[in-house]
Amino acid sequence: MAKPKKTPRPKAVTPKGFRDYFGAEVTHRNEMLARIAEVYHRYGFDPLETSGVETVEALGKFLPDVDRPNEGVFAWEEDSDWLALRYDLTAPLARVAAQYRDTLPSPYRRYAMGPVWRNEKPGPGRFRQFYQCDADTVGAPSVAADAEICAMLSDTLEAVGIPRGDYVIRVNNRKVLNGVLEVAGLSGDDKDAERGIVLRAIDKLDRLGVEGVRALLGEGRKDESGDFTKGAGLDDTSAEVIVGFMDAKRDDGATTVARLRELVGDSQIGVAGCDELELIADLLAAQGYGPDRIVIDPSVVRGLGYYTGPVFEAELTFEVTDEKGRPRNFGSVAGGGRYDDLVKRFTGQEVPATGVSIGVDRLLAALHAKGRLDTKASGPVIVTVMDKARMADYQNMVAELRQAGIRAEVYLGNPKNFGNQLKYADKRDSPIAVIAGGDEFDRDVVQIKDLILGAEIAKDATAEEWKDRPQQVEVPRTEMLARIRQMLEDQS
Image 1 (tube, rainbow, N blue to C red):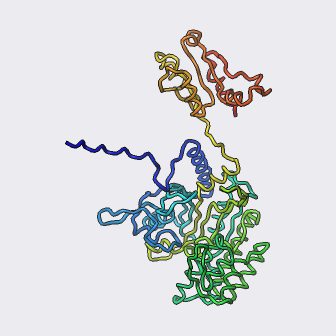
Image 2: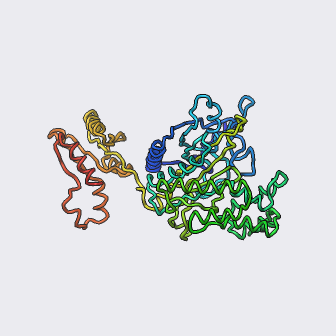
Image 3: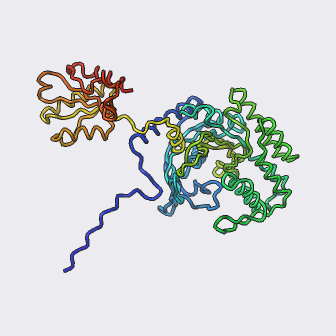
């Protein structure tokens, strides 16, 4: 009789495109989210938590400006309905704004933080699950709402540790581009295909450069692999109008807007877009947000097929080293804009909305690259166990530390080998170990071991600075809390 096959053990691997987050990473993220929430709250925005699952119908066209409708999400069928994990925090907001429009204040100002999921091909630094942190105003048609979002984004970056001079927020307007497209002969429903190609070409400016975009505006472009992408087929005159739009930035906002007015000519929507950019600049200047923080820049082309008015992007301007050791600018960490058509899908009526989304993981990576994050989070004080029969006494010690606001724990593994307890404390990045055995209990004292100092002495035992600092001290049990507090202060 054949033996039954054993069920194979599952592989202990993270699914492709996903990752696990440990200790310091989670701590740093939570601290950052708390700082961001503080700024958002100060600006009058209320928190909102929506379900991680939405109906496919509510999500609508997935992934703005991606030519794969109904793709890019994790979806499944349930009772004849299709459900999907949310791919951003804006689509759920549109559903909420429509569903609760009779009870929500108007304008409705909300912020949301949490994971989103995208069923896309993963790559270096590109994951299928990541955190977003959004703030949006729904129901405010004035570009004062857009200016406020830009100001709040500036304050947020500085609050989390990006100083002035290390970032710039660039502002553009979809209406200006619409005016440029009109001048280039690309208005009207019969030009939808060409207009779509042009928008996608402009979106590739950072990757392909001006000449690459120019090729896509004309007959097309062949990439390094030999693949050919068909272009919009514009003549040289029309193509130059588009290129002129991307290259319209001047030394200050006023001359940039003046150049844009030249490009849009008599186009009504183009002129309206220029007026909005001018007003945004004036509103920000009145609040003290000058070109050292926020600038008018037509090269910002993020999501122009999705947005209906102003768009903005926060770029970090300092250099980092890539995986090949080459210097490069860190790049974008946040972006957003006005999207007046999204809620309309539910209500049939245009509802003005504007907002911003911060890539939390990108921002954390930036702070790490600048050395502004500790690579390790401080672990708990470890109360070691020398006598299992005295466990109640050890628990009493740790309770006293916790009640004083000090992170602490009793070693709960096998206490037989004391060396293993110190190895455990080392793995936990513990700053201090408390040691008490039968002799210490008889004399009502404890030993307090400075593990941070011990690690430094191990690196360089001859260093002059260690001579007056004992690595381990004995103190009366009644003085344990005060001495640990002092030792933690000395370490910090």
